[in-house]
Image 1 (cartoon, one colour):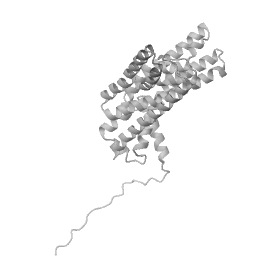
Image 2 (image 1 turned 60 degrees about the vertical axis):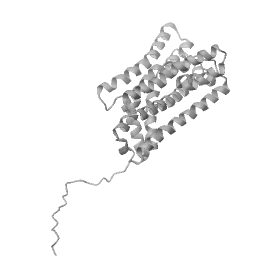
Image 3 (image 1 turned 180 degrees about the vertical axis):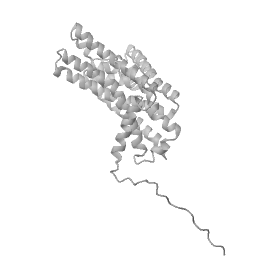
Image 4 (image 1 turned 120 degrees about the horizontal axis):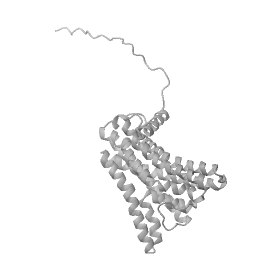
Length: 296
């Protein structure tokens, strides 16, 4: 019987030490992923060229607010210029371009490369990962919507506007900004997560957001001319921008922005809001399903 071969392996101590500090939990992991997503959308951690477009678009959203404040400094305060809810929906074009261009950064690259399987092996799981990525895009969109509104608000107060008069309209605008950010991010996230290719994701998001906006406006105009005011009001569901504008007018007593349609009463406004939340829930459910299918 042959003798077993002598084992010659040696374990070398090369100085690695076990980690003995505190370990971050799910909350810390989620917070880090959320913040890194916001930074990635604005180009941080990427090439210099990646920072150009988001900051140019952000400037396009902010400059009109600064100009309006400057006009009021020279000509006197004008209540029509302090239309916070209207400003939220008037920057639709800029927001749509930003969302379409940057959503693939969060929702296409990892899925296309297959790296997503490594992320989903972590404790967060597919559901939390998808929702945190979506929340990162929501926060980025809010920078486009909330910052110029606050500039207008502070400018109006500095020119003598009364806080008790301006605060309700500001709250209406902030509510509209939040709803618009939630819905626009969900739409772009869905398109980017299913198309994967950056060019297709950008084109698809623009089609849904901007072309949908144009189709909605045309449909509302035709319906209004035919006396179908109810149809015109409910057509707002085809575009997040028109929908938010309609809800602000119906529930916040706001002045209509860039998409005037027959004003809905309060009951219709609440129904539109509930419908918007239902559509948002459906969109997030589909997004989570997409990530779960990749993590299975």
